[in-house]
Length: 173
Image (cartoon, rainbow, N blue to C red):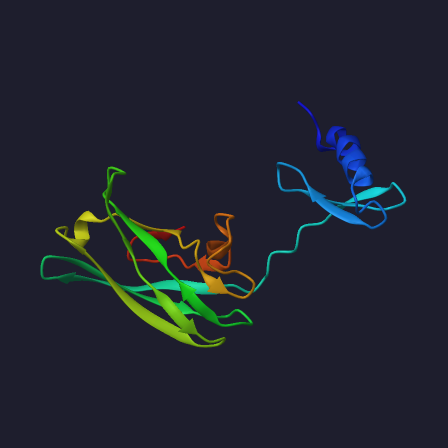
């Protein structure tokens, strides 16, 4: 297995022979690790940004038998230091045998820091007792903080979201 350090000499040669050889250059490897290549020939890894300790929280408030299906009520509490302009996570309802019954999207938009927003989501054609787990996924085209709909890295939006455990059923990311 090649290590990251084995690829650094090639990256260094490339950087030093480029038109920008008289300036520090930041490069990345295939694993996402970033390196600072200095114009004096030295290099160092750049530590990834720390994950924020404060996250937005998603809580499942209720599940209610509704005509033709099961309705879930949830709350998004924005504990981040910036507005959540748009977050559209997916929710998958699982049967007890582990099979996905259906998946749906719901939108949380314009939730200012310290504010909360409630949303309802209904799965038609299944009773609440037949849903064993609700899983949160996707949401990769969010707009909050430095993230926007043009980010290509999967999971960054949900990384800023803590899904609180529920006594109603298993509720997780």
